[in-house]
Length: 350
Image: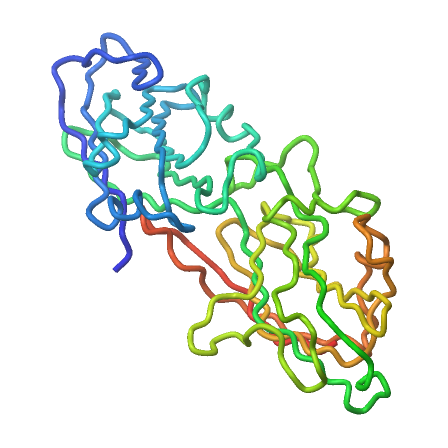
């Protein structure tokens, strides 16, 4: 079952008092409604779960035209109770729900919220992702209910297995080990409006050519698992779907409408370093891009094996040494309010 957020509005005689930073009504002398957001038992469980569906904060915005009609930063008590209440006026309204974001109480218009920039590294952690959801042109009356889906802003990129298959080449006899896996050109900033989408004035990329590798950033860098030595015909990690095993390497990027993000496998063969860049393509919010199995058949791009991103770590591998397919499925829904998803699954031969 897909958990949802339900909004129920009931007529109020007057606005209730509010505390700064908690609830901000932006109306006087108008007929009002009391809006209750109820998200059920699964959502309450998710709030206490340290995983990709965890919710630790919820901010709700109700907009009348472009102006702010009401704002609520839910308290810890409300999150645990599964019910959030706020006051707003009746009529056509746009509703936004933002989870796990920093304080947005300074927002006074819908356009300002859409254009506000969030930083992946700054605002997210591996168990607490910023999420957004909205409902447009909702007629809030005395009795009102609506389901709102909330989506993660990040894209997820996962690698499951790496197979060495160089049996037709003298390379099969050489010492070979996987040393690390990382992303290049991962996008580090985005606007909260993931639906249009509105793009930041300037895109910030992590691990672009010439950068010092972000080895301390788990969103874009992961050292090899042990044992990393890979003999010919064997698999490092686990191919997708084997006994339900989790991904061997998991990375994150904010959406990239230009398709710049690449997953790079670095290996050490006979004492020399080589990289195998895998282009992910255009990435979207709340989508997961799964690489089932990478099969290495030839040497990759020569590399220095140091912490500076070189051109070879961002160049596509020779077509003769790299073939792969990509399909789209779903990421696990966000437990709190549900969410739309997508996945890229592929077997890659390099």
